[in-house]
Length: 539
Image 1 (cartoon, rainbow, N blue to C red):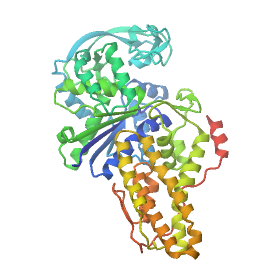
Image 2 (cartoon, rainbow, N blue to C red; image 1 turned 45 degrees about the vertical axis):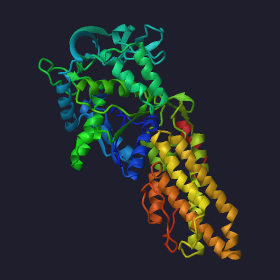
Image 3 (cartoon, rainbow, N blue to C red; image 1 turned 135 degrees about the horizontal axis):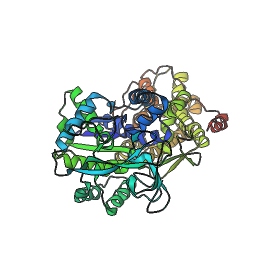
Image 4 (tube, rainbow, N blue to C red; image 1 turned 120 degrees about the vertical axis):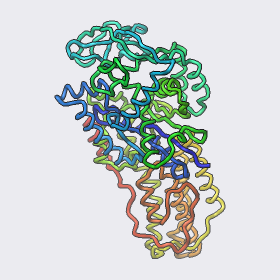
C-alpha cells in the first residue's frame, strides 16, 4: 500500500547565503523525496526560508534595510540555488508568508489553552547600544559549567543547555558591549512535564540517527527546561493573545511548525485531506544538521503534544554531523566558506550531489577537499559511470546504426539489477545514503569489467551474435542504473532515460531490441586539476 510521506528539510536562516554545510545536511531529503515518488508514494517534501528573529533583524540594521527586504533577498537566492541543485520541493515557502503566519496563529491560539502553557515573568537580555532585546544565541559569555566561551542558548564545547542570565560576563554578540537584563512577562511551554512522552519517543526511534538518540537522551537526562513561546521583538508573528499585542512568537516556536504549515498548503493545493498525513499510513522524516537535533526531537514534539490535536510525532530523524572545509571549521563571519551560488556557476549539479552524498557527514564529520572533489568527479562519475554509458551507446550508434541489437539479459545480470533495486531502496529508507550510492557504483565498476571482458570491439568482427548480446545487456544495465541513480543524480538520469525512452519509476525495466537511440552527448566533462589550487587560493 502506498504511503503518505512527509519529508521536512531544515529551514535556513534568511540572513546570509547558503554554504556547503547547508547542502550536505539537506540533500538527503531530496533523495528520499525522489525515491518515494518513484515508488508511487504520496510525497510532501517541504521546507522554507526562516525569515524572522534577531539574526535577520541585526543583518538588516547593519545594511540599513528592513528585515523584510533582507529576508526576501536571501529567500529568492535560496529558491534559485535549490532549483539549480535539483531539490524537488513540493512546497518551499518562507516564515513571513501569510499562509504560514495564519497557520501559526491558529496553532498557537489552540496551544495557549493547553495545560502545558503558562505565564511567567523572566529576565530578558537587552543591549543598550543596539537598543533591542536579544535572542539567547545573540548573547555570548563564559559557560558556568566548563568555563569556556559559550552562547546564551548552549555551550558548544560541553553541550550544556543555557539561559543567557546564567552566563558569566554576558555581552551582545553584535556590538560586544555588556548586556543588561529586564523583567518581562511571557508565555512558557512546560517541556519539563513532557519527559515521559519525549523519552518514549526517543526510545521508539529505531530509525533515528545515533547522534539524534544520544543528543536527545542527554538533554532529557540533564533535565528538560521550560521554554518561552513569546519574545519582545518587533520582527516576527504577533502573539494571538490579549495583553501580548507588543510581543511576537519566539522564532523556535513557529519555524519548526513550518513543516505542518507547508504540508497543509500542499494538501490544500492538491485537494487532499491534511489529516491523512498524520494517520497510520504515514511516515515522517526530518532532515537537518547536528545542531538542529533538539529542535526536532524535543521542541517540535513538545509543541505537537501540548497542542493536543494528536499530530503525528517524528518517525525518523536524519541528522547529519558537521561539514568542514579543507580541514577547518566553516566560518561565515570570517568568510571561510564555499558559497553554493558560486559553486553552481562553475560546477555540474549532479557532480556536486554525487560528492556530498558519497562523502557527506552522514555518520561522522566530513571534510570537503578540492583534491578529493576533483578526483571523485574524474574517477567515479566521469571515469566509471559516464564512461560506461558513453562507450556502450556510442558503440551502438557507430556500428549498429543506433539500433539496440538483439540479445538476452543473463540470469546473473538480471539478479544483480533486481537485487540492486531492493538493496538501494532499503538503504535509502534507512537513511544510509552513502552505502546506497556506493552499492550502485560497485555495480557500475562491475559493468565496466563486463564490457572489457567481453571485448565487443573484437567480437564485432569475430562473433557478431556475441557482440550484439554484450551490447544488448549493456543497454539494460544502463537503463536500470539510470533509474536507480535518479534520486541521487536527477539531471544525468533524466538525460539517459530520455535517450532510452523510459521513466524513473522504481522497478526493473528492459529496453527492447530494435529501439532507435538518438545522438548521445557526453554526460560529464573532465575537471582540470589546476582548479584545485585556484579554488583553494580563494578561501
